[in-house]
Length: 209
Image 1 (cartoon, rainbow, N blue to C red):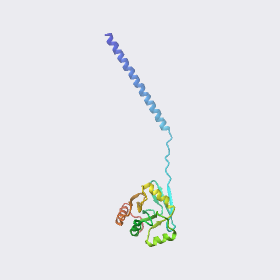
Image 2: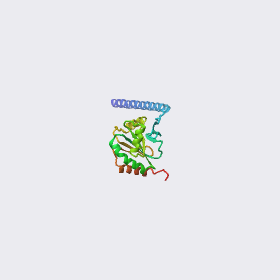
Image 3: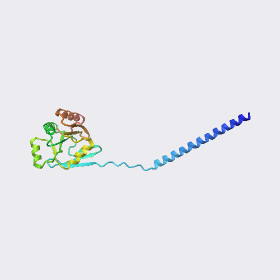
Image 4: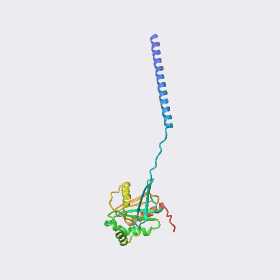
């Protein structure tokens, strides 16, 4: 009988000690968590620095300054507010580039109130006389850029789109500066017009009629 009581006493003692250890350990964890929470609360929050806008400026074939700003993952065409903008990277000696010009002329004429084509010539630079002759011979009615300063912008487009440099390469932007669609190689006039119509439904014209 004594042996049994002794065993019971030892068992109860162990339970008591185990309970004390658990109680101590739990208290220690809570204290640690509380201290860490206090440190976190007192820590000065890091300021998030917004990237500065990237500005590109270059001249068009008429000597007019073109300004394009990359800000908040969008391209802002400062010269063409509320317009659908197409960037057409082409070359003066590129057969498919030359073949697409009449189609672009027609599209620019048809949607001139809401749509702007910015043609950027990426092969060897032309002098003033050759450039004027090129524009006249192809009856180009949209903006042509053939300027050394446009190289930085062209390189930037390559980086953000993954474009490998083959031409023609065209991008259509929404009036708010997002890329809507791109074409690698020649695109049928019907396809271009279809995409412009889609955008005009999404972004109703703000031009005065």
